[in-house]
Length: 126
Image (tube, rainbow, N blue to C red; front, side, top):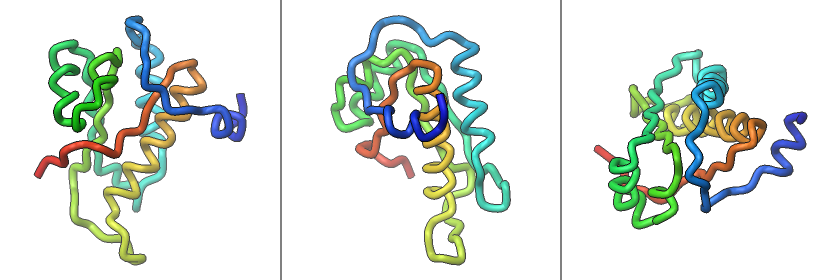
């Protein structure tokens, strides 16, 4: 699949099977995020992979009651390790860098036949 096809065909998925995600696919997805561009190649991020059913259910509340979060076989949280930096254009560096990384991650997941849903509704941690 070429990139434009992946962009055109990708959809947000909110219903999941109970099949676990294979470790090699998970590795490829995270590698796509790692290879994404970031300001000065800082890669000021961590990706927290959650597969534990109890923790997934607890994430439902943190994601403002979105029940499908608890049904996903994997939840990947993208976190900045150096918040507060601003780009010269006035945009927060961490938000831009994490958005790019998650876009790469989502496109690789689609390439591998996995459904994803970008979440913008969650309780931000201090």
